[in-house]
Image (cartoon, rainbow, N blue to C red; front, side, top):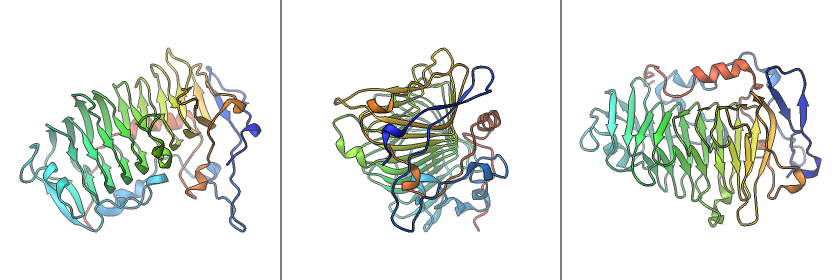
Length: 368
C-alpha cells in the first residue's frame, strides 16, 4: 500500500479557461522479487481512440476482452446462439425466456424496439446479451444479476424504469466477472447501475449516463462489511449532467480512467467508509456545483481518493482531503492487473467520449 504522508498535489501550469490538470505521485506496492510493477505509459499511445475497436470483428470476440477488474468475463462464449424474435416481456422468443435458461447462451436480437419489463429480468450465469445490429430499449424495470457469474451486457438502452428500488442494472448479491459495455442509461426511479452485496470483478466501459439523479452506487451501506472484497473498473464513460454518484463508493476498490463527467448537481465522485478510489486521467467539468470529490464519514470512517493526471475544467475544485486525514488505504490498479488503455485527459478525449459512448449503430458481427 502507499504511504499517505508522501502524497502531494502538483498543479500543471498554463491551462486556460480555468482548466487545471492535477497529478498526485503514483503509489507503488512492494512487488515480489524480480516482478516489478507494470504500469502503462500514456505517451506511447499512437492515436486517440476508445478501446475495443477489435471486438466487432466477430460475434464472440467480446468474450474475455474487458479491461480492468471484469477482464475474465466470457459471457456465453461456449454456448449456443439464442435469437430474440419477440419484444414481449415473456414467452417464446423473448429476452426473458433466454435469460432464464441455465446453459451458456450468446443472445442476439432479430428485432428492434422497446421491451417493457413488468418485473426485474433475472440474468443467469454465462450469458451475453448482445444488442449490436439492433436498437433495443429496456423500460419499466431493469436487469438483475443475482448470484451469477460471467455476464456481458452490450449495446442496449435503458430508460424510464419506475417503481420502488428499481435500477437499470442491479448487481447483487455475490455476482462476479461482469462486463457492461456501450450502453445508454437514463431516467430510472432509483439507480442506473447498483453494485452491492459482495459483487466483484466488474468493468463498466463506453457507457453514456444522462437525465438521472443517483447514477451509480458501489457498496450497499456501512453495515455490509463483506463489501470490502468488491473491485470495479469504470472507464471511457460519459456522465452527462447526472446529479451525483459517478460513482458513490463504500468499501470497494474502484479504478476510474478516461471518463468525462460534466455539470453534476451535487458532486462528481464520493468516497465513503473505507473506499479506495484511483481516479486517473479523467475529465471533470463543473457547472454550478464546483467541487468534484466528496468524502462522507460513516462508522467514523471516510474513504480515499487518489487523483492522478485528471483534468479539472470550468473552475472545478478538487475537494480532496489532506493525506493525513484520510482513513482507509490506497491502492494502485497495477496490484490487480498489468495493462489498460489510458491516454492523457485532453479536450480531444472529451470530444471523443461525447460521440463514442452509449448505444452505437453498429452491425451485428458475423458469427465466425
